[in-house]
Image 1 (tube, one colour):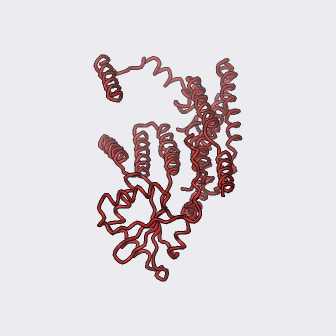
Image 2 (tube, chains in turn cyan, orange, blue):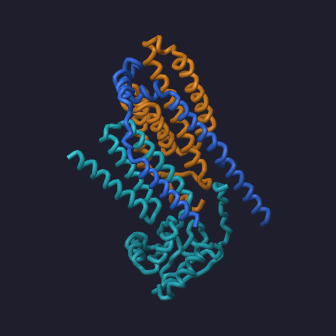
Image 3 (cartoon, chains in turn red, green, blue):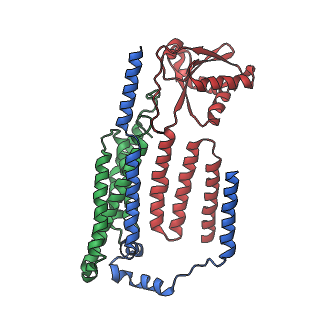
Length: 195
Length: 139
Length: 101
C-alpha cells in the first residue's frame, strides 16, 4: 500500500514534468513545475526526510516559482482593444464571446501563442478615434459589416509581421488591416536589463 | 507604461496575505528557533523569512526596502557565522562547557536563518521588483 | 555538430561509469554510522541528528555554504542594473526626445 502511494506520487511527478516540457505557454510550464516541487516535497516527507521537504516546499515551489514568474513578466503584454457599441456596454461579454469564436480572432491568438507573447483582449468603451489616440492598445479591432477591421500602429514591427502572416494565410479570413499614425510617438522604454 | 491600468493591485490578494503575514513570521521564527529540536533550521527558516519580503511587497507596493542595508546586515551576519564556530567549536571550548551546547545551536540557527533570509530576500527583490522594465511588478 | 559531439561524449561517460563501476551500493562504515547515531545527543545536546551534523560535526560545510550564498548576492548587487539607473536613463531619453521636437 505504501509502495503504491509512493509510485503514484512518482508517476504524477513524471506527468507534471512532461506537462511542463510540453506546455505551449511558459506561464503554464511554471505552474506545472511548482506542482512538481510540491509533489517532491510530499515524497520527501513520506521517506522520512522532513528537513528536505520543508526546504523543497519553501524554495522549490515558493521562491523559484516567483523568480520565474518575475522573469516572465519582463516579456511585454500585448493588449488588443475591441471597440464596441457605446450604448451597449452591458452586452460586452456576449459580444466578446461572439468575437472570440470568429476565424480572425483565432488566427491572431494563434499568432501570439506561437511567439509566447502574453495577450490580453479587452473591451473598449470609448469611441474609435478616441481609442486610436489612446496608446494603451497595441491593436484595435472593430466589426464592420462582415469584416473585422484591425487598426495597427504603422511603426510596430510585430503588427506588420501579424499582417503579413494573415495575408499569407489567405485573404478570406475576414480580417482587414488599417494603418494609422499615432498622434504622439509612443516612447518605448529601453530595456537595459539585458546589458 | 502601457498596461498600467490593467495590472492594478488585487485587494483580495492584499487582504489574504496581510492576514497570513504574522503567521508566516511566527512560523519562520519557530522553525529557526527550534532547529535543534524539530525538523527545520537556519536554511529552511531563512527561506520563509525571504518569502516575507515578497509578501510585504505585495501588501504595500512601496519600494522603500533598502537592498544595500539588507546586504550589509547579511555580511555582518556572515562574519559572525565564521567567527562564532572559530572561537567556540574549533578551539574546543564548547566541549568543556556542556551547558552552552544548546545556546550555541540556537545562536548558530538564528545567525544562519537571518543570513539566508536576507540574502534570498535581496536576490528576489533585485530580480523581481527592482529590475523589470522600470515597472513595478504585481502578482 | 558540436551538440552531437557533446551528446556522444556525455553518453560515453555515462556508459563508462555504469559499466566500469558496477558496484554502486555504497556502504558506510558501520562504526561511523553507529557513533553518529548513538552519540550525537550527548556530543551536541541536540535532539535532531541533522542539526547536530550541520552545526557541529560538519560545520565547515555550513560555513562555506553561507559563504557561497554571500558570493552570489555580491555578484547580483554588482552586475544587475538598479531601478535608479534605469529611471535616469529613461529621463535622459525623454529629454532628448523633447529637444528634437
